[in-house]
Length: 111
Image (cartoon, rainbow, N blue to C red):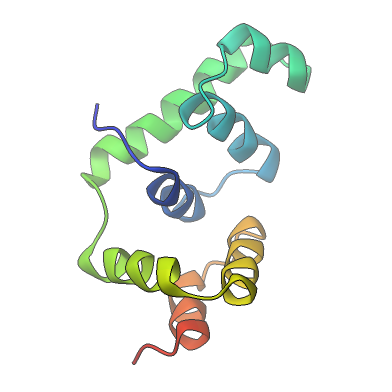
């Protein structure tokens, strides 16, 4: 499976309809490298449930074969944005806003 950066993972997670808690579990495993056992214990769920969550995210990563050109442009502009704009965008992504691309374009002033 293709490895993804933290930014790519966040964009992929923003496209998946999944609870914030489950997205946090996916981050713990796929970005922070926690073990399944450690993550299950920390979140008070079974190891099987952790595996199911991670499997779903990995499937999304492999099926999408990365990011679209538009999303890559947004990532580049995001990296250049000031801290206030980055914080606003990250907060929006954490709220599972379905219109994140449109909102990011407005925040980053991209036509």
